[in-house]
Image (cartoon, rainbow, N blue to C red; front, side):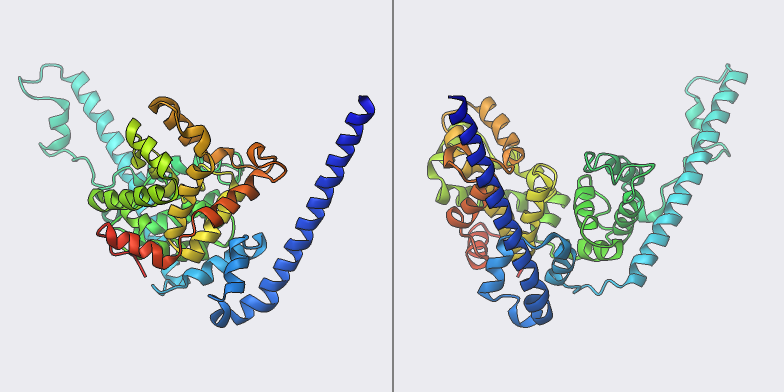
Amino acid sequence: MMKAAQARDAAARAKATKLRLAREKEAIAALNTWTSQILPNWDKVRYAKKTTDLWFKGVPPRLRGTVWARAVGNPLHVSPDVYELCKRRAADALTSHRMQRAALDAALVEAVAKRTRAPSLSSGESSAATLSGHGETAPPQQPMVFQGRKDTLDLIANDISRTFPALGVFQQPNGPLAEPLASVLEAFAVYRADMGYVQGMSYLAAMLLLNMDDYSAFATLCTMFRHRSGVLPVFYRLDLSLVAKYFSVFSTLLAQVSPGLAAHFDRIGLRPEFFLYEWFLSLFSKPLPLDMAARVWDLYFLDGDAALFRVAVALLRFHERQLVGLAFDECISDVLRLPGRIKPGPAGRVGEVDADVAFWDCVRESVPLDRDAYRALCRGAGLVPPE
């Protein structure tokens, strides 16, 4: 028995080694194709089937920044000078914010001191009145660029500390990408003053910074929010009427791909808003393992918003058997944990195929949603999707 077990282990190791070598060979060939054929002839081959087929398999990590930036282009003409200007304005706002805070703190201390020295204030009078009138300094307003978003600066700092914590590259004091991430987010809050910074954007900027320099990350982030009717702007603005229509698109697609699961969700009252917000706001970079999330981003820069719906439905389709039949509490708990389960390793229900490979097969074969089909779904829900 021991010899048989040892033989099985040896065979498994040999198979794993063979698979690893095959993947390395495939990765080298893909890198060569991208560098020698696709990138030099980008405008001609961008939409060629050979390119999109290779793209679906994942952009080589060292080329992701280049490919992503080329895919979205720079239609807003965001130059390095624009980025530097936004950074300077954000820095000025931050300095003003700190000075105003210090002034407010000093005023509060003085108010408390006055109240202590003069306890016999007349009825209806208080230390707050001292701050808001009667010749004393009123509470300072936030800098205009952050007006209406009083906690923007603090929110950015707090979010950065929670962004990809396992990597340790975005956290102060020693994280090498902490300062660039803050710069990109603060500059974006200036550039898009109509939106400012919204919690969750740190994951978007961080994923970009893991693959490109800070200026390119800023320009790409701005372009990703270009179309007002796109998923990211709609979800971050929390435009409820449009969000509801996108949920309808998702529900329609799920019913087409997995009618049994869609019917089960309807029966137990599990609605898309219970899980899609978290998935879409970070483009899956928060819930998915990083290497898997990067492939989702590859697909996003290939197919646009359609990729998000495709991946979301595939996640549910891939785990359909374990979800059907669960009560609401168990089902939503499982759904929220699904992205983290797609990791390299044996996928029990599909034999010897790695779980991540099996999942991407599911995306390709079970949810073949191209741009035209996606736009048709959007129009059916009353949306005007970005071109």
